Image 1 (spheres, helix red, strand yellow):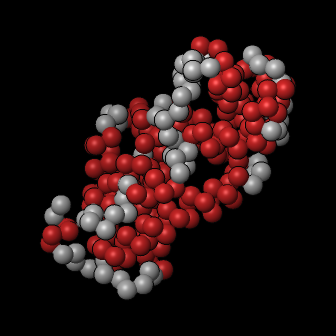
Image 2 (cartoon, rainbow, N blue to C red; image 1 turned 90 degrees about the vertical axis):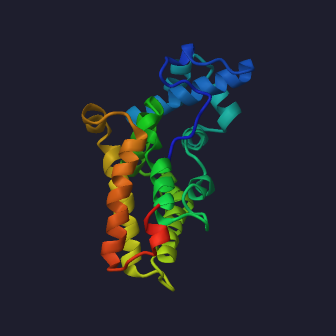
Image 3 (cartoon, rainbow, N blue to C red; image 1 turned 90 degrees about the horizontal axis):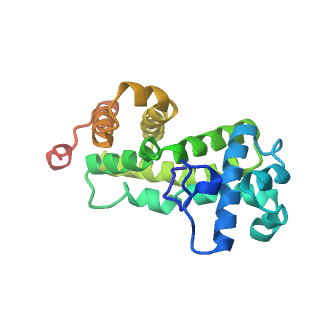
Length: 229
């Protein structure tokens, strides 16, 4: 559920956003940006296609042309801002990574929203709305992204901790590792007010805690070559 770079400048009003290469792309991006803001603010059911088209300065028929219908536009909002799960997993699940490198890669992709400006705020608000007023996209997110990433992290922990098969304890530890990042993401305003916008510093603090917890939780000592990097 991590924001990926988009061609939409969400820090500017829709009509002042970065101009794409064609009028058609410009109209589509204006509709996406307007829809993101309205869906995040009002939810799916309370947002009409007329409101979206008016906010985007486009004809309401353009929604059908580019997205099929309101549901298609809603899904496109998530798809335009979320990195595919395989890309996220590749950042932490590599056979040559040490445990610390895996944790650093995991938190790098999890905490990217802290540096993504309004993109991150819109994405989080959209997900909050979807969880409160589910349309089915949240279940898709769980199955297509959250679950594969969780299982990949469990596999990483099991491999480095010498477990032949994943255990319930490994699953619980993976949930706890994710929870630390989510706490920082959800408390974004506090983080921005209290801590410097230093990804290396924030990531390092969380990785250090999780690295120690991974060893202590299982009562195991990692090989020196893995534990020192």
